[in-house]
Image 1 (cartoon, rainbow, N blue to C red):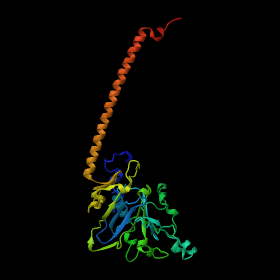
Image 2 (cartoon, one colour; image 1 turned 90 degrees about the horizontal axis):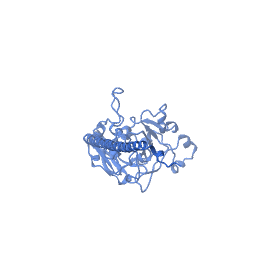
Image 3 (tube, one colour; image 1 turned 135 degrees about the horizontal axis):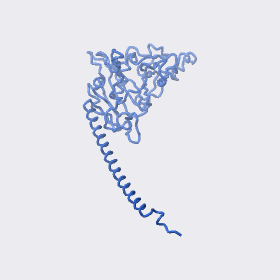
Image 4 (cartoon, rainbow, N blue to C red; image 1 turned 60 degrees about the horizontal axis):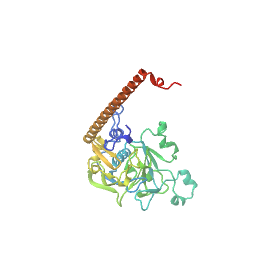
Length: 349
């Protein structure tokens, strides 16, 4: 059944409960890059993840620096209750942020080498290009991909844009105290970490796409001892629209509440194991475990059974009325035939 037809309390849909890109055992014996957590680490990065087209809908999180973009995609799904839709990341530099809207990108982009050679040097500072530094996308979106994956537009990117797969790039390759992505991608001027951001583009559009940037005066956190590679939520506000939303029946993203279970220390680890699910509903972001899913599924089946029995009773009653009406008609017809019918009673001139 389509998500738009499901009741609000029906639990997570199949796309949520399937988990993020779980590989078939017959096809691959390698760990799934979308659900396998990396080894413990000392280095973490504080990020600000903001819904692109909405105010006051964001997450402030502390994420292990050794997370790949594959795990970052899974983490975004967890944070906002999204299903596993097609997506890609654009790493951009020369970023100019909105002054009053935290984390909102006003302008960004790099000139291609051809344009750098053609334009005067001073243009590099006062005008920005349109190309990202890097396009990071799931496996299967390169040349020769099916036609329904053309949205990633690999061919439309400039020749200078670095193309990577989601499991090939980690966050510490983008932001780093010693060097960042501009250090190894021939940036016309070395951008600071604060001038670098990530655009997460979802197939469903801007209502489920995000800006990702550094947060705080010192976003790089280094612990004395290695910590488990589990992210921590510092602050969470609002949630995005449901993926088949009706704006007339939903609250605005900044008005939606967030389930307390989202901030549990083991929540994301359980999510990767398929023991926990997050779903963005019309009024709040909900967190389910397996027991809650089973309970709601039983309630759903019970409602369907009651509705089916009600329809059967209604059809039986309507059928009874039709039979009574038909029997009455036949009696009248018989009496008319006995009397010679309707035309027999008309006067003859």
